[in-house]
Length: 217
Image (cartoon, rainbow, N blue to C red; front, side, top):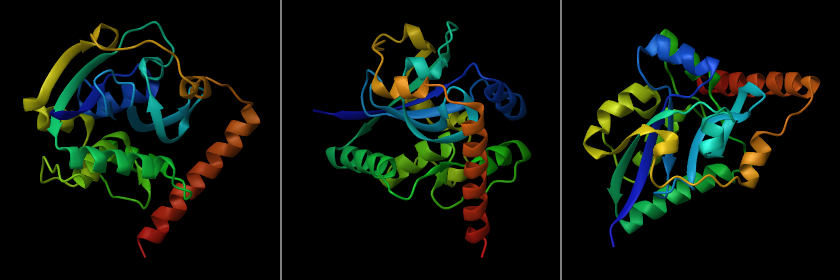
């Protein structure tokens, strides 16, 4: 039985998403990868909490996190990529190794700014959404472009993945989507104090900048 992985690019209803789309001059600003057609096992690098767009890492996404809990629908493209059983296992292993790594992976806000300024570089154990998706495929031997993963934007993905298009339309209109909330969704929408978020943001920024400084040595 043939196996597939699914790459999703989306137009998220956030202020940060609008800024990224403006500078990239593209329709989409976010990328995710799913291990199943229902998008129940969909992963990406983005904000960890609805209340703080500045602190991010790897999360398990859903229709609720992509819409940030708003009623607005989200335009998406879904690309279905055929893989072997071995490639599927490598993709799963790569994702879950990051998810469970004791040395936490962070969202690379420096790289996000690099997309806007066109000054991009990789940083140890940090990703942005499109970099994470392409690196995941690359780790399974699916090198679909000569570009390095950290140089790829969601707009680039739509061009690279064109031949694999499976669905184009609104997220809630995707025929296989399931609207059941999970514990991951509950954590995403759990609000914390302002003081906690300020401290958490400063810590996150320091960690990423520290790794960036060491990677340049």
